Image (cartoon, rainbow, N blue to C red; front, side):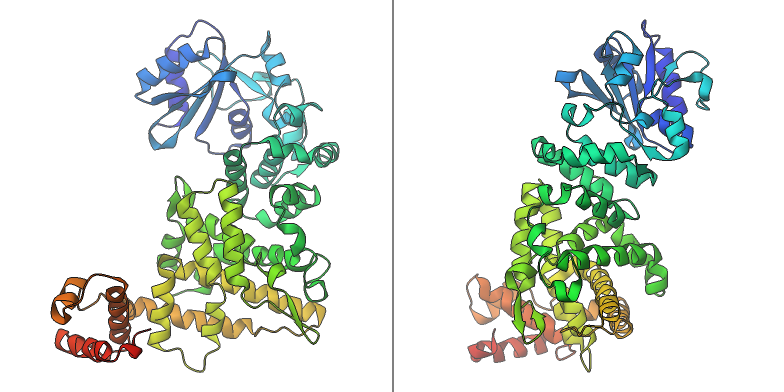
Length: 483
């Protein structure tokens, strides 16, 4: 149901009190942006929300009963929120909102049009002017104390609309940044996800960092900034992280350029929904943000060079802690930590003299669904490391030929897609067949035997069941052959 249809259905209910469109819906209508979020303010909001839920066939539930806000979820994920009017007038209600571009209202009356114009809009804080100026500006100086989540929302609006934040607003935000500690973790996660879903999130994360928000949200960033400054620059590993995220945000919209033969499959894979409406490519960005957090704790020196032995596994432990603290889902944590644990492997594979089917099999066996994601992260990492070497005229401990890296990754992706059944084969024998044949009991050994068999199949050493039994018999007779 399009927005126009929803509003017409609302008007048919003939609610006895004035109903106003407010906030983001008004902004989006003025900008001619598509939206599925409709915010309404009225008296007796719960009554109208219940009536609309029944008439529309939508799902009604209280969103925030303390503040009398109710939601109706419609088909195709349209959200209609009903909030009780605060104060004695709509103007007083708007004075309690956050930013001027969201402090506008339109009275919903019979015959009103979606093509709103200046004469229709209640705009006491000059939000239309700030829309034209493309600026995020606070309505009043109490906005962050009233709701500290607005500290993050300022950057989310800035990122999504590509607007700048007003100087006075950013100054107040910086002074009151520590208020973010009062916000529930799940609300913080939601805003972070929305920022990462914007095309140039690295710009806004850097601005958040300058305002002091990042270190409050993720204190583990602080040692990143003092690690390996001689190679990475004044902000150490954190500079590398934000730079690499920029390269990733260049790669993601150009998958057809980087992987012309398999772009459709990769794009479909990256567009998978991981949790709710959160896409895999957004979670991949979060993985990049966290992938090097293990470097400060593993930093050593060999002569003038920095080394970070084992930083992948150290990074997994830190990422698990950070993500759990921010209430990311178990699936999101699993995807992110799998990528972090293996993010060095694509580079290592690309520089082998020969990339064997066995190596490709082991890579996709260990990474499964995250194999493609990790290739993209590794490319962004290669580009930013190479750029750092060129800019700072420093030697890296890692190979930095991004062209060779891309060539190797393309070769692996090509062979994986052309021979997927061979490279990641279905085992010729299942666990029951193996246990019956060799009189074995259930346990970890069976899984290891199946993995050994699949690896042999990937190398074309085993092609049928008799060969499979013979291959496993050799391993069982010589236990030292089993890892």
